[in-house]
Image (tube, rainbow, N blue to C red; front, side, top):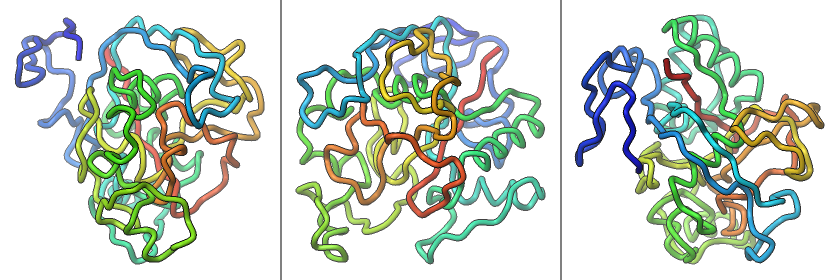
Amino acid sequence: MRSFWFGCMMLASGFVYAETPIFAGPANRDCADCPEMIVVPAGEFQMGSRDSEEGRNANEGPFHKVTFARPFAIGKYEVTFDEWDACVAAKACVAVGDDGWGRGRRPVLYVNFEMARGYAKWLSQKTGKQYRVPSEAEWEYAARGGSTTRWFWGEDSKRACEFANVGDESVRQEHPEWPRHDCNDGYAKTAPVGSFKPNGFGLHDTVGNVWEWVEDCYNSSYEGAPADGRAWVTGDCVKRVDRGGGWYNKPEAVRSALRYAGDDPTRRNNTLGFRVVRALP
């Protein structure tokens, strides 16, 4: 991770805040029930995939540069049931089921796009800070963690089970006909967040576990996409983008560049969740 000055110093052990702390509470949280956040540095990256990338889809191009003039904070993990249920207790979110897979630190399920937005609005009101669903560019920049390879850990799909909860031998035991990774991550359904190694920015589960909603309307290519990291809110706004793949997906579907080809924003199921972004002062 590149160092930067934002009321903090970069030390080998991580960020040590030397001026006004960015977050109100410990562990980069604004409240006890708030998501833990990671500060992602300003910088630039190449978004999408090259024509030569194996498994590439047409909607991942053209390969293009996106520049972030300022750092931003994004959830270290996907939003969990514990965090969602705090919003339910405050009567700002509706209760959702877990299919008997477990709650607590597992990623929340059955949340549609507007519900994800509503949670971010509740966090903003609760903390006085600006939370929202990430833009697609923010999501990919953070998810790559500085990598340029097909998967953030490199080019070997067999290493997936070190870093992500994906379609693997555990899933195959229940669904032998499904395509899979040639490894075993130990989870046939969702896993508690943080169960696997992080990416280069310190984020967990940016691929696998659950698909994650982003703010952007769907466009079938990146022609005309914002180059400054903002959400693209024109196009087919009857559909919204989700990213990252889930607990059941094959190697091609958890590449960093993979985009779901537009999703019904009202859809709720056991493969969809989200993480949040928080603006920095």
